[in-house]
Amino acid sequence: MDHWYDAQLVMNTRDSDDQILDFVGDITRDVGAVQAGILEQILAKNANVEYFKRHGLCGVPSRDDFKRAMPLSSYTDIESDITRMASGDDSRILTDAPVRQMLTSSGTSGGKQKLFPKSETYDIESVLMNRISRACLNK
Image 1 (cartoon, rainbow, N blue to C red):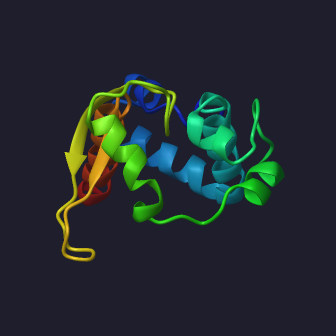
Image 2 (cartoon, rainbow, N blue to C red):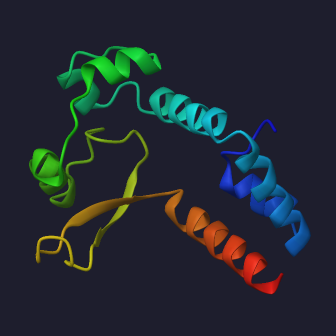
């Protein structure tokens, strides 16, 4: 499946519940390959973000280079970056995709609401997840 990672394409080419469930079957047959493909896409799209450069990554990193260079991080590690983005800094800080809006979490983790950037793909990906849920419930 060439474009399993493109939520808009999935939505445009699958109308029925059965087609949506076939898609779910396709992407769950080899989860490791799907995850590797998604990571490859994310790394390619975000190759020039400030966060990658800060950790010594230049250009499109390989999976192994990414794993070596990037530390495990928490929200507090990127909170100053999120604050810059929320304040209107449109530099490519954490993502190359333009940030359309900042959303807030419910605050159930640690008792404090957190901001997170909403990119242009967020809405269609949410619709796809709802469509998959509906197809499963209808079965």
